[in-house]
Image (cartoon, rainbow, N blue to C red; front, side, top):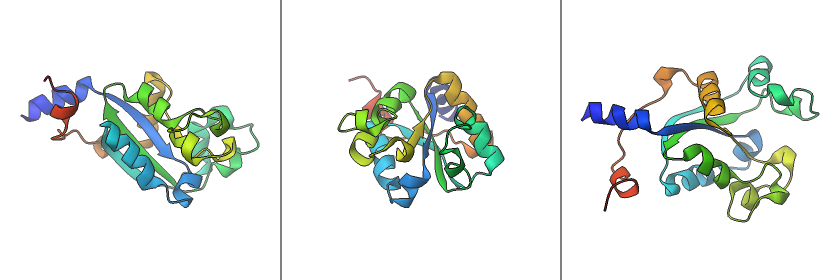
Length: 158
């Protein structure tokens, strides 16, 4: 049984998702977690973090020159790793466009955000980014592998 769980976990894709300080401060954690859970994705890593400026620079290195960068560091984040078939691609759809004004209704940003600088959530944009972000934010022992009883109803054959 444990061996089967390990094989299934190895086959499932993982992504990094972070609820940004504006989402945390607005009390949107449960709303966001609920959307991923309802889709059928499995939470395998979670922590509340206040990253240092140096750590934030590692994650947001492409945004360091932007005026809002200093607001990204030294504030509370809710970091997660989600697992499931297609979780990276679908997670991005669930999150919505970076600019909330261009996000479709029904997406997290389309429903809950107004401006780019306060767009509530971050999600990995591809397999390599997901791997790098997960390794940056989580130690291997902070991630779990388990079988959720609902998986047979999500992925099973009829």
